[in-house]
Structures are given as structure tokens and as C-alpha cells.
Image 1 (tube, helix red, strand yellow):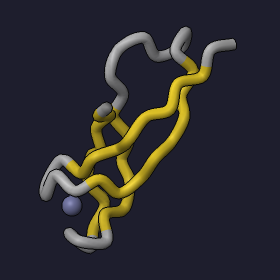
Image 2 (cartoon, protein in one colour):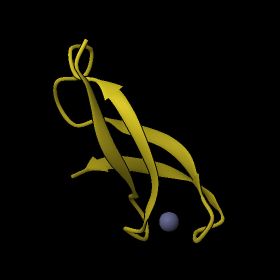
Image 3 (spheres, helix red, strand yellow):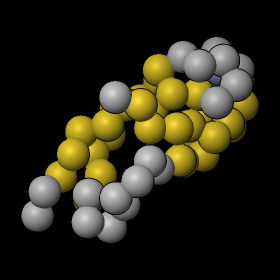
Image 4 (cartoon, protein in one colour):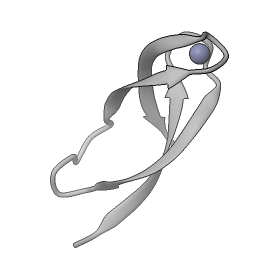
Length: 50
Ligand SMILES: [Zn+2]
């Protein structure tokens, strides 16, 4: 199964807080996760960047 490494960027402050892997077959496009941003000090939507 092809797993792709992705970087997750905070939607509010655009800082890159997380790296993760995803399954490209399950998520062919860009993914978005709600994660805690320690700069915003709250949960924000984090978007995949490359
Ligand atoms: Zn943030």
C-alpha cells in the first residue's frame, strides 16, 4: 500500500506543526485534520502541504 508522507499546516497561523503519513488510496486529494496548534493554543483545521 503506498503511504505518502505529508506535512500538516495550521489553517489559522500557517505554521507547520505536524508530519504524518496517509494512505493515498483512501485519500487521493488533500486531507484536513483538526489538530491542536500550540501557537494558536487551540484546535484548528490543519491542511496537508508538501
Ligand atoms: Zn496555528
